[in-house]
Structures are given as structure tokens and as C-alpha cells.
Amino acid sequence: MSDATLLLAVLALAIGTYAIRVGGVGLGGSRLSLHLRQWGDPAVIVLIASVAATATLYEGQAFAGWARVAGVAAAAGLAALRAPLVVVVVAAAGVAASLRALGIH
Image 1 (tube, helix red, strand yellow):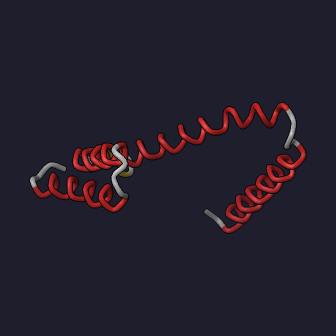
Image 2: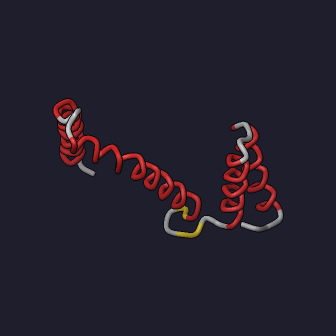
């Protein structure tokens, strides 16, 4: 990416951010604002879930392996049981490392 392209991308992002801020102030109490809020929360959840699924299943262009999938599944199960974050992270790493040690990548 050239310097000019990077500068244009940063400027476009800055202008877009400023426009959203100004628009949010202007549309604060309108019906459009309520409609956007109803769709905003589910959209964020879907976006985060899709990024997490992509990061779980792929490393670059290739499949990441079953050890990573099993580690993420273990983490999701423990998180659903409301285990402490440290327990979730250590268990997920342990599952993935154990499977890789057994030759399951």
C-alpha cells in the first residue's frame, strides 16, 4: 500500500467517523434512531460471531486444524458455564496443546 493510499484511507475513516458523530447528535430522538438501535445490537453480535468463527476455522487460506477447533469449543463450553476467564483460557490452551502433542493438528 502506498503512502498516498494509506493517507486517503485514514482521511476517509476520519471523515466517516465525524459524520457519524454529527449525524448521531442530529438524529438522537428521531424514529430513525430507534430503528437503527433495534438493528444495531444484533448486527454487532453477528459480526463478532463471524469473525470468531473465521479465526477459529482458518489460518490464512487453509483450515486451522482440529486442535484449534476443539480448544475453542472447550472455551465456549466453559464460558457458557460462566467459568472464570483464567480457567477458560488455560483450559482451551490445554486442550489444543494436548491434541497437538498427540499428533492431531
